Amino acid sequence: MHDEAILSLFEERNEQAISESEKQYGALCRSVARDITGSDADAEECLNDALLAAWNAIPPAKPQNFCAYLLRLVRNSAINRYHAAHTEKRSAANVAASIDELAEIIPDRGDVVSEIERREMLAAVNTFLQGLPRKQRDLFVRRYWYADDIAALSQMFQMTQSHVTMTLSRLRKRLKKYLGKEGLL
Image 1 (cartoon, rainbow, N blue to C red):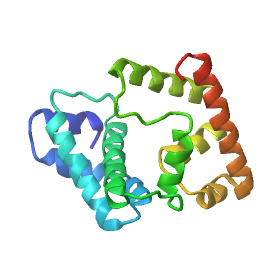
Image 2 (spheres, rainbow, N blue to C red):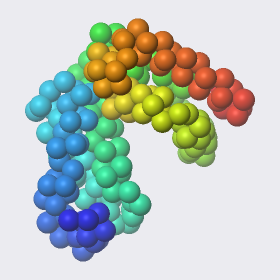
Image 3 (cartoon, rainbow, N blue to C red):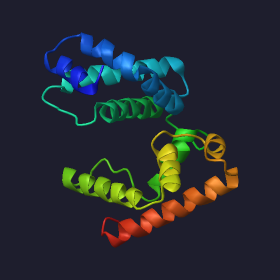
Image 4 (cartoon, rainbow, N blue to C red):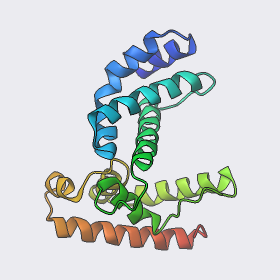
């Protein structure tokens, strides 16, 4: 079933929207959540939370890309669940490591002055990513969106682990410089 049909089911408040969403994107959503939480049970809960959030938000929300919308909901749920389960410093975990790496550049402030600043930051990061060669962009997204670990990235991109680490470090420095030029840091 296509995204438009699934969104129509949501708008009609037809419960089949939930089952069709799970059929279409369940495996992908569970994979993202599992990579973040490290648990199949937590991944299942994150998927359920995301489906409930989508049910509650659509309508009035009308996502242009339903897959990306659902993945964002799953990812946010997984990160929240991970943080709730790990209250102390999490330097060994992939998710914490990837979040900590980016936190050096983009601080997570609970007191963000406005939604406009958040959107400006998001737009700037997207513009930065669009300017990267595809391999670097994919590497960055796999690390900082999907929270893939360095070993997996090394195999995926056929690079040594040290090369992956160095490339990510350089990309973070370039992002920091770019955000500084844009006046966002």
